[in-house]
Length: 542
Image 1 (cartoon, helix red, strand yellow):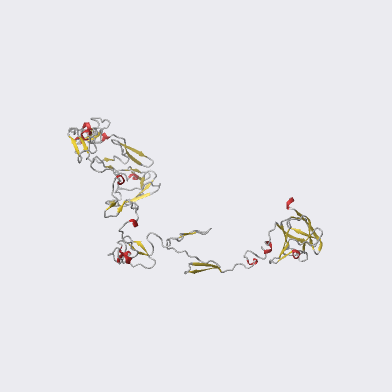
Image 2 (cartoon, rainbow, N blue to C red; image 1 turned 90 degrees about the horizontal axis):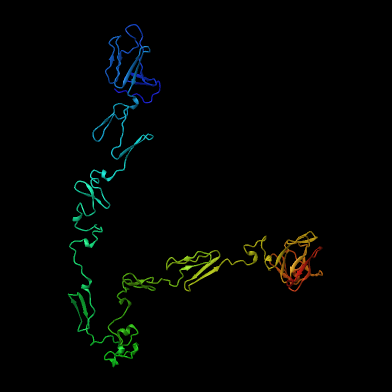
């Protein structure tokens, strides 16, 4: 039985097979044998029988019997009497057991390894090169460059090829030959398909070619003098066709009606005269034109025998399969004109708008001629339709604001009607410091000099002035001034003239007359210290 020692063992590793144990000493496998003692017929610690799995057991015949260890193939046995050691060495190496000892080839000559360390060399043959890669443990077989003559059935060595030749089978090999002229069956081809070389395209290289026909042999000569009914003749010698036109001298040719002299003024039986102007009324013996269907069938002098005429009598009109209803039109159905809800070439509402545009909004396009535009009522809007009069009435049901304070953007702390009652060049917010002075938001200090321009309006915002400091406009002498004064309360009450002066709260508008200039005053009617100047500048002098 072959021993399968472990690959890559460590020192001290043991291997047991068939009841025998070996131990690796770092270099070889040593058999482990129990030592015997002296005296008696032999050691009581020795084995009387050595059993090997699959083999006959070896039994000692006596206490002094000897067990011989014989080295087999690939094994070496070494004994050491002083250490009572038997060393078994595997010369073949247990690590190389999975290699091929024989390499078979296609030729039947097998390659057999002479030893476990024998080397198999893979050599490239003809046009084959072997390349080894030690890093990848890989051998690559590459074909080297070779000529077509390497093929066993090609011979380009006996006769070297020249430019333009091809390979042709000569019965033994493929050899160089001239294209379509030698070898194979090129000259015996039934057709010239593929024979497009300059040789075959030269007409002069053809055998048994037909004679060429000159164009003069089939020419047409000049027309002969007109004679009789005309004829065409052919000259076999010159190959000329000659055309003889017919003699038309006895016929009228190229004559217009106006060229005819002594032409008749009438054509008997047809009522045609030279003076006919093309009008139906100028014809004589004309039938009476009917004005209705009854005259077509009953009236004397009219066309009779037609019967009652209806549109269905027309061959391409069908109103019997589907009877028409009110409002329908005739529409082509592919075979006939038949009643339909919409016209053939036109739309139902040809004068309707296809697009509805609203500024700032997306356009509404009709998807079809019968598409419907729906008007939807928004907040505080009511829509009423009248089908009889085709009227849509849009009513604002909200009613709107009834006074200025009802507007949504007007609040008690925000915009008031007094703020916008009159347009002014500026609005001065009036305040006060105790009982000593007035202040104005666009000026610094107490009781400043106010400047105004004649012909403009200046507004004094008195909403912060308490009831104890009435604000009065005065002339230069200190008298109350009332020209152009308008006072508006926060709720919209308006007073003018002297009634507008000396007020608190609201807005005091002064429409400064265009013709004044110089000094004016403002004064608290309750406190003499609260007084200041108003300087009026004439617009013309600025």
